Image 1 (tube, rainbow over the protein chains, first blue to last red):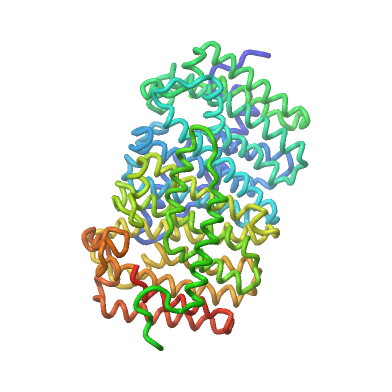
Image 2 (cartoon, rainbow over the protein chains, first blue to last red):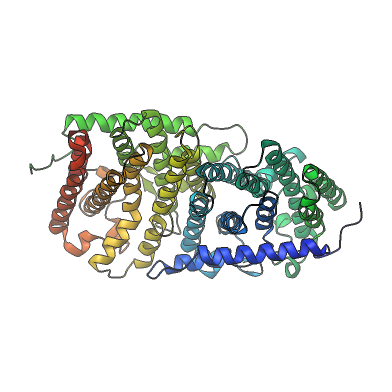
Length: 305
Length: 305
C-alpha cells in the first residue's frame, strides 16, 4: 500500500464526501433539534450545544456513504446520520460528567456540564438518546416500518448494556488495573466499535440490502472502528491538547487501558494499519462504488486530530 | 360515587388484576435482564436492582389491562409492560442522583447510586432506557413491524425532551420559584403524565385498535396520570417516610411546585377525585370490559402508599 497522507484527507473525493456529510448532518441536526418556547428551552440549548459543536462526523459519513451504495435518498440517510450523532453526543456528555471521566474539555470547548450544569447535562444526554430512537422510528425516515424497527433494534443492540454502555462500564471498572490485550480489544469493540459498526450497517438497513452485503458492511465497520480507536489512543498519547481539542495524555493519567499502552506506539500503529486494510477488503463486493469508504479506512489511521 | 376505599384495592377484581400484572411484569423483567458473565455484570446488577425492586407497577398494570381489551397475548403485553417499567426505573435512577434530587431512599431501600456508585447509576439508567426501546423493536414483542415502530415512536414522544425529560427539566428550573397552577399542571403532565398515558395507549397499539379507541385510552391515561400525581404529592406532604418508602416532605423541603402547595390538601384531593371520575368516563365505549381500569382510576386517588 502507499503510505497514508500525513494529515487531513488528501484523497480529494474523500475530502469532498466528508465535507458533504458534515454539512448534511449539521443541517439535519438543526432541523431535528428545533428549540421550543418555555422553561424547557435550556434543555434544548444543552442538547444543541452537545450535538451541533462540529466534530469529524465520522459516524454520519459512514451512514451517508453506506446508504449511497444502495441509492437511498440523502434526506433519509441524513436523518439516520443525525440520530447516530445524537446517540454519540449523549455518550460523550455522560462520559464527561464528574462521576465518570470528569473532563472539562470536549472538541476544544467546555464540556456540556461545564457550559451548563451537571443536572442539565444528565438530562440533555438522556433526551438525546430518546430523540435518536424517535427519529429512527419516524415514518419520515423510511416508508417501510420493517426498516424503521430494524434500525431501532440494531442501534439499541449497539448502544446498550451489551454494547456501548457495557464497554463504558468495563472501562470504568478497569481504571488502574492491568488488562490483557484481548480484554482491551473487547472493551474497545463494545465502547466505540459497536456504534461505528451500526453506522455502516444502517446504510444496508435503509437500502434493504441482501444479508451478505449488510454483513460485509458490518465487518468493515468493525475493523474500521477498531483502527479508529487505536488511532485515537495514539493521538491521546502523542498529541497535544491544542491539536486534538481534548485534554491530552488523560488516558495515561487516568490509568486507562489502551492498546498503545500494552503494545507501544509502533506496534499499535502497525495494528491499526492492518485493521484498516482488512476493513477495506470487506468492501470488494461493492467494487468502485465503495472507493470513499475504502479511502476512509486509511484516513482514520492517518489523521492528526 | 361511593367513597373510595381508605387503603389498598378493596375491589377484589382490581386487587387480583394488580397482583397478576405485578407477577407478570416481574417475571418478564427477570427474563429480559439476564446477567452476563464478565466485568459488565455489575452494570446488570444495578439495572436489576433499580428495576426488580417491586413497586406498585401502575404502568405495567395499565399496559396489561389496556392490551387485554383487544385480546393481545399476555406474553407480548408483559414485554411492553417491562419496557415501560424499565423506562420509568431509568428516570427514577437519574432523578435520585446527587446533581438532581439527591435522594438516598427509593421504595424503602438505598437509591441506586447509594447502593452502587454514581457512575454505575448513570450508566444503568442509560442502559435501561436503551433496553426499553430494544424490547419494543424486537419481533418477539409483536409480529407486525408497524406496531413495533409505533410503540417506539409513542414511547419516545412520551419520554423525551418534549415529554418526561422536559418535565424533569422544568421541575429542576422551578425549584424555589412560585409556579402558577397551569404551569404546575403542565409540568406534571410532562413529567409523569405522558409515560402513564403511553402505558394506556400501548395496549391500543399492540391491539391495532381503531383510532377512536386509542384516543379514549390516551385521554383516560392523561386524567389518571394527573390524578395519580396529585395523590403522590398528597402522600409526600401528609404521609410518613415509613408509609411511603420515600423521604417524606421532600417536595416542600426542596421548594418543589405541587398542586397541593398551591391549592391546599383539601382542594387538591377534590381535584384528584374529579380527574379520576373524568378519566373513567372516557372508558364508556369499552363497557364492562374496562371495569378494572375504571376501578384503578378510583384506586390511585385513594391509595395510602
